[in-house]
Image (tube, rainbow, N blue to C red; front, side, top):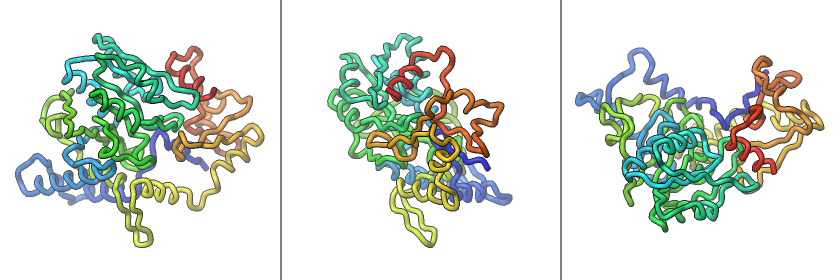
Length: 361
């Protein structure tokens, strides 16, 4: 039996989301372009509007502040490149522990002459507001700090950093793909300018994400793709409605299944996680049984999300545990690789080395 542990990378599709996809893919289902003027197009537009409202409710936003994308990577690209284009350039502050979707964009911006400062994390894997403040300059135009780290689960003090940026009239973006449904998000209380989301991190389908773009004060971005003028002119071409509807269901605020009513996005994810665990032994105890005294479970503490379990394997090299020829990590009778079992290259790049040394200090 294979036990999938890598939910930090992607989550399985919720049955409710799959039901919506089946309804739109089934023979005889109505297919229409929401930009069309006929009646089926109008009904498709209504479905997309409902999906947009559900995603907005997850973060306390207005529906017209939600721009659907193909995922958080596209949302990050639109946020960073679109902001710098609209603002006419400027200094960028980000961190050394961002997802590659932000780090690679920052590196690309540097090739175009944009100055970029990357803030290092502390011993707990988090970036402090004080460190971000110290990195800012008079010409700083944009700050981008992820809300929850996708490798360590560390929660950055995004509300504090957002308020710092607001006080200095600097645009602030956060990649919240790992945070949605796991930590409270309310853009009415946290003055973020731009916020990226991804459905497949929240039991939705792969290939759908969103960018929150604040209306007041307005955070305008320059489109990075052209052709079609959809999503308020910020994204090209027609969207796949069934993915948007299914993705929004994974974010939805209430779930009624005849037995339980879940009243928050966080509780909805907890319910989905509970369903997966029913009938299975405690995975941490099972790992401990197979790895025995080489295994140490680490407490989460207040700085990491509960969904990311962290362990150490005393004296064990990482390479044998993630050998692709051995079907990921197979220990005894089928314990598979978890996201935290990683092996750095022979000469890891500085960003990887910083993350691993800081997180393990």
